[in-house]
Length: 112
Ligand SMILES: [Zn+2]
Image (cartoon, rainbow, N blue to C red; front, top):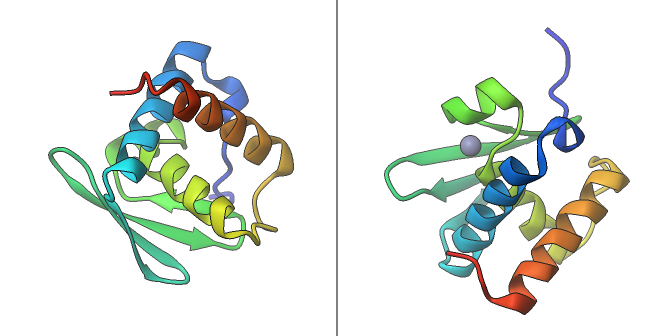
């Protein structure tokens, strides 16, 4: 089993948009709760998930993550971490792209 990696580039833009929309909503509604430096609790509409910060990236307990290696919870935590700075363990390209998408969404206020 290899290290978990984020693979936003492999997702089609619509799927990514959906994930980013959901992530923005999770953050905006205060559903991303920091438990420790290495663990976040994310409250989705129906389920709660734990996002763990590992050396090579973020890992989520939800089925979507298992399938696609990316999910709205991971993206939400990524964005929260980014806002607080210090994200050496995440790929720069991924970070920039996610933040660009999130900024666009927040500006437009069209999510939900
Ligand atoms: Zn998840």
